Length: 148
Image 1 (cartoon, rainbow, N blue to C red):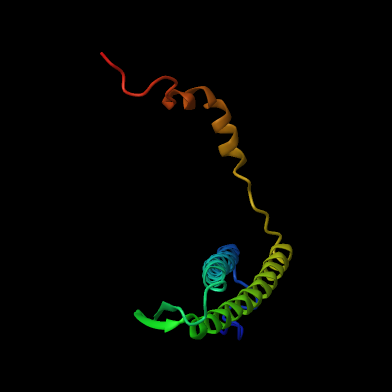
Image 2: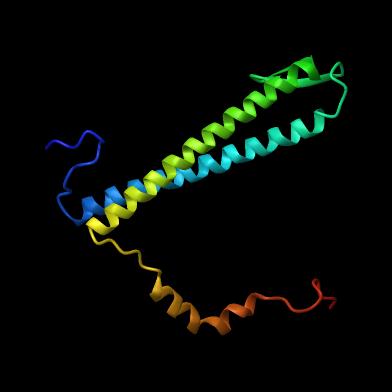
């Protein structure tokens, strides 16, 4: 059996194959989301560093971690490098956002092609509504640590 160039078969054989492909696509989407979040945190950290060292005197000493090694430099040397790294990270985040939109569209097309609908766990919601009273049993409503 030959599969498509993308690594996804052109026409899945059965429902299980469709479900597996769909799960893989959702997994890729989640990986893109987590990578974007991670890189946005890095951009935020770079912004904090830039805001902290920008008003300082350029000849002042500062330390920078490069490949696991802490090196001593001046702010004049470090600030442009941090700004370059931040700009590079911003560019990568933008590319990942584009990839995210493409993947979302691909998943939406796949869902419409194979008539995939996500269940919102209706059965679980109905079951939980009946257990509402019992779920409150674990809640403490008084001062903790009784004195007996």
